[in-house]
Image 1 (cartoon, helix red, strand yellow):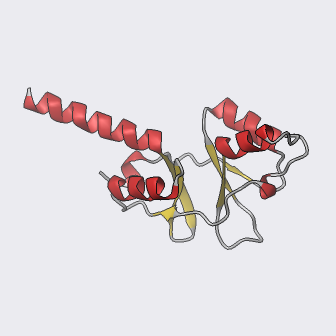
Image 2: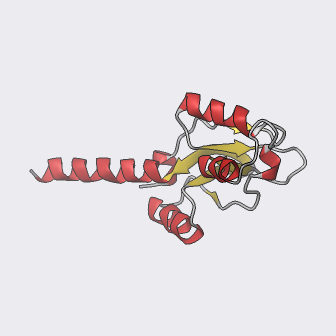
Length: 133
């Protein structure tokens, strides 16, 4: 199975000047754990995750004052749609993160989460089990 088959193609993007509270509210409303950060001043996308927001709040920082630019991961691993899910999972485990941004050339085309991978593998196992039975 490939990244393109498991990723979410509905990419939620934010800018570096958004506050953490606004991003947390938008992510919560959408039921997602990460957003791509698009900054015209940067060569590629960054990512802000629920974990980044949690760490900031845990340090006692004020979410209404903290900006995405201060908490995002800028040096992200970018996946390609034609990667196998095993490759994406291995990169996520190696890097200790739960989301990767999927790009096709310069375009952001998706976000893949560990949940997406597990969901795809589980569906694949169920389908294979039904075929065997």
